[in-house]
Image (tube, rainbow over all chains, first blue to last red; front, side, top):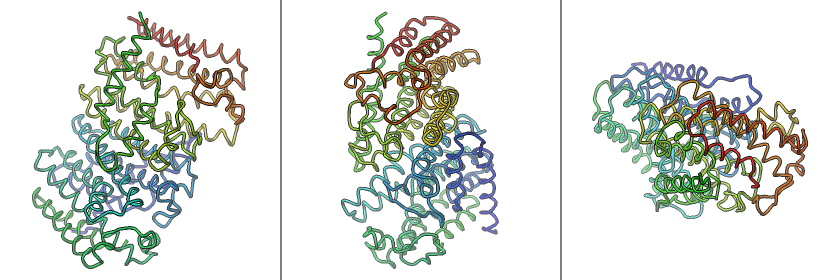
Amino acid sequence: MDLNALLLDYKQMVEKRIDELFPLCDVKYKKVIEAARYSLQGGGKRIRPVIMMEFCRLCGGDVRDALDFAVALEMIHTYSLIHDDLPCMDDDDMRRGKPSCHKAYGEDIALLSGDTLLTEAFFICANAPVSSDKVLKAISFLSSNAGLHGMIGGQVLDLSFEEEKPDAMALQDMYMRKTAALLIAAASIGCISAGKDDEETLKSAAKYGYNLGLAFQIIDDILDVTANEKVLGKPVGSDEKNNKTTFVSIYGLDKAFAIAAELSNMALDALDEIGGDTEALYEITNYLLDRNS
Amino acid sequence: MDLNALLLDYKQMVEKRIDELFPLCDVKYKKVIEAARYSLQGGGKRIRPVIMMEFCRLCGGDVRDALDFAVALEMIHTYSLIHDDLPCMDDDDMRRGKPSCHKAYGEDIALLSGDTLLTEAFFICANAPVSSDKVLKAISFLSSNAGLHGMIGGQVLDLSFEEEKPDAMALQDMYMRKTAALLIAAASIGCISAGKDDEETLKSAAKYGYNLGLAFQIIDDILDVTANEKVLGKPVGSDEKNNKTTFVSIYGLDKAFAIAAELSNMALDALDEIGGDTEALYEITNYLLDRNS
């Protein structure tokens, strides 16, 4: 199997669908659409859409049934990056090698473009061309994993660490919410889109998303120490500079990498539990672990 | 009919349901829940929930079928106020006679509490105890009226007026989106909750929300000139101080009031089109026009 061809295929499907569902319109307030699309098309890897669509295929579904949910998930991921970069949050000037949204469009428009992406994501879900049952389950998984006890809860924990340094358990809880929650949503909604949403399958999907998400975040910690700044597209060494607790600062590089590898193995176990043609997801998982940006 | 008793009844139902659906939990990130609930319980008039529930009753439905959607709408209204008050937007220190959310909890927590309210509103809708058909229509109306071409579009237009003064038409377009859109959602979702969502009924519901929303916003313009600061709960004269174009600055007080009255009459016409026991909505509409805060 040619993984790069598959990834490119999914990426192109998602990008074409973004243009259809969230087009640039010629309205007086189009600045906010431009800003949202600037960030949405910022050259992301589309990891969450790819995982959702491939889980749909793994569960015997037509990937097109997951496509609109995949776009919605990517919009929610993008809104979280825009708000996270704002001066009152992480105050990041750069994102994926380009000025962050508020640097390019101003804080007010960046704030509203994040709000737009989040709101329109649910409109897109509500109007997805699949059964009502699938839509309602998808919206429920998306909102709960993006919400208070998912991604946003993780961001609040992240902020709280500025005042009180976390231990390994607290750091893991934060990563689970901040990063893994949307990957859990990706895998779960993939299954739901295919109509295979029995308890066992959803449990394995969540296990996959959880372990991959943690591994992914630990790799981020590692790359902040080891990566090439040009390849990464953002400054390296920022965690140490900001005196941030990471898996690397707690465990050191080697142990952190071993933990990430172990978590990835558990993610692969979860795929085996679901069974079927897991080859692509195996490759994607390994690709995410071996990445250098 | 005792309007105050009815309003109090609805208000209490909504507030009890907020406590059930969006409770304060003892989690490490509870600060964001506290901040969201601080703003959600800031003593608002619950106009949108009341209108939604009364439209549901008018259309022969059980108001409890609209209740969760009413809570979700109030959460979306509240998130918009929190984000609108932020320093990068209107930079308002006070809201309803209390420090605004970011003044009480900090900008980062205020931003995230707004994101939480918006996200959890859709979770609440997706899990509302009514038919899937009603839920999907409600989410679609809610997201479209709160989104790019509704409320957020209105906020972007409002921002753009700082650079280019609007004429009456542009101002009306902004008010329609910024204020009327959520009232259109309130009335429409009330009808949907009752299962009366034929094209004619939804058209009249939208006409009601549109005209009431414009009237309501024009009354806001008038109160900024005529109100008692203590009763209003926020500083008066701020529009003139900020050199803002309003219906009062364009038309003068008397004409602005006449336009608001005319719009209210059109809202009442819309009620007549739906028919049935419109007494309460008649009174609510007149109450909103005669308000002094």
